[in-house]
Image (cartoon, rainbow, N blue to C red; front, side, top):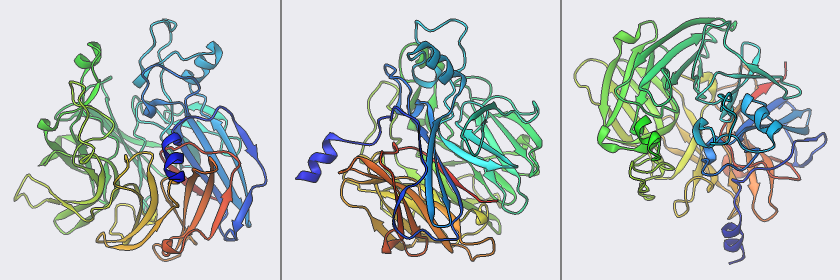
Length: 465
């Protein structure tokens, strides 16, 4: 009963109101001595309350855990986007949800970017990402904001928070939705080589305007999921939800060869569903196999008339999509691999786009609302079979687990998982370090913070040079 009361009165979605440096953190257990680098984590942390603003659109705050020779330190900073700076100067919110200006905001204010979803390191640059704006470059040590990065002017418009790095070539492959403006069906697609030079950028039309959070990349193909969280300017202008669940639109996935063009895209159809995140995908002779976290109905977004979606169906489960490239069918298969509720899937990124034998995701208690209730980690093999399952104490929640290999030449899956844990009873956070192939044993070390890290989205590890 006591824990139920804690869970009822508290969650970890609200922002923290400060930036901090903690040079010497308490460690329970022992940090692996060869785990040297920084875990960067990103997530929404609104500077000011804004009426009606979705949790998704809070200002980005970066959290950096620096681990070195068994010691740990921490730093957090807001990403100082043009929106954050304007609101900081004004001392109040100027934007509502999805870049919408409030009625009393200055007329010349146009940029509502928040850079709050992911943070990656590529071609020597640390980049904070969200899906409506260009990447924001960050100074790795100080977390100072350097501003938008447009690749020498060769990339423009929206840029996904989930670009993929090819582990063989080092190429960064990306896309953007709303590429012709807000709530439009246009997508962009491009690539950045391992030196940071933009080598490709083009646009094409999708079957309808959709919120396309993630996409799929294999060694030779790119797949664009167009799923029915639809965007509508007409709805937005009339005060209705700009994004809504319209299952009658069906599910489309466009398949394009990486060395081809948008004119070559072949569109496959499937049952209406929604997917925020891809675990991995690979080619198997004339098939493409993709493991995803699939919802039967979209969470967080209503029907066009404002009705909520069914919470029983608004939970993600590990699902396998299969595409037959031989031309025998334009339908793709959708097969659930487990009934466990989960999200934020990760792999050993050295196998991205290639057949993988290990995956991990944060799992949830199916009796509780999914977001804000991720309470454990699942380890699965290449066919989705559970290899390990760890649950936190009741009421505590966990972030996306990030895999770190033991060494550059270590076998796939040989390394650690890093995840930020919220301790509900103490209302503060730990960085938990797990042996990646023995999650059931629990954390080998806990790096303890004196405050909480609010629930967020994604992070990545950058090893020491």
